[in-house]
Image 1 (cartoon, rainbow, N blue to C red):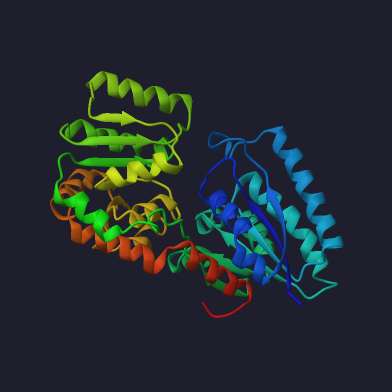
Image 2: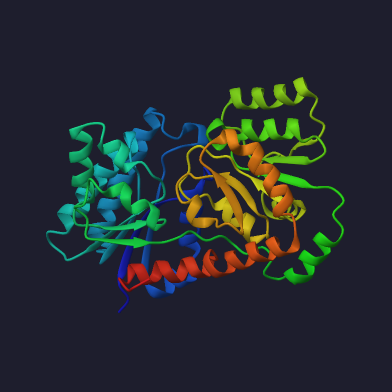
Length: 367
């Protein structure tokens, strides 16, 4: 008999990191083969700009989620529960409310609970008030944590009331799996005519698009491709006003991209620029590695865990970004670096590895 697992998780839309991971878990054949699964999507925000903001629709979504989980506990009777957790604001209060259902359920049936955290900030949140500390302790008491990397364990130092900690690095699809990537890389680096740099992320202040534009202004002989949806009307206005003001003919905006269009941008790129100011485990950096593209980023979240000295470079101070960019131009645009990035991806961040590790964690095996 397969164990029954109730998955309560974020899915697209909107398309952010946790939602992409949720989409993949639902589609995973390995997960479905290992367990008897039931999936309940967590619906909360209509768009990226809506995340973290209150509106009355979210109250409706919380009520709907509560009764879906209650019904599933009664009818499905799971042996384990997987939940995509939040850290603060109304999302945390929603999580606490929903968690009361399995806290009561656990009184009648032996059950294992797994909270998967896709973000950071627990330590900061619980440090703000005693109420925050008590609520968070109540929420995670006697459950198992799934964290993106060992760098996040220190984020839970003040709330050590959980049972176990598991580490589960994200993975992304291998878009080059059907190609002879050794031949592809040789052709790409044998004759470099124009250097192209890619910024692929939501175009919002916290992701560092303004700093990327500043680099484009200083390096006008390099093509800077920007791809992603705008975080707000103000971001869109700033972006195009900046291009117009400085007459940046080397900047190209491609909108939100996916599929072959996105793959083509990665293939044309020699560097990935991602000056994020707040991140946990950006999937875009995993994509850059899969295409053999070295990354310039920051020391946010698990980025120092994803990148090493041969696959990219990260800064703690964005004032160093220009110096780092110069270093990358001199040291990373070569066949050796591209092959190394590709190998780092294959050894650590494929979807197969993510699936295998998730199944092991949910079976409570060593990962």
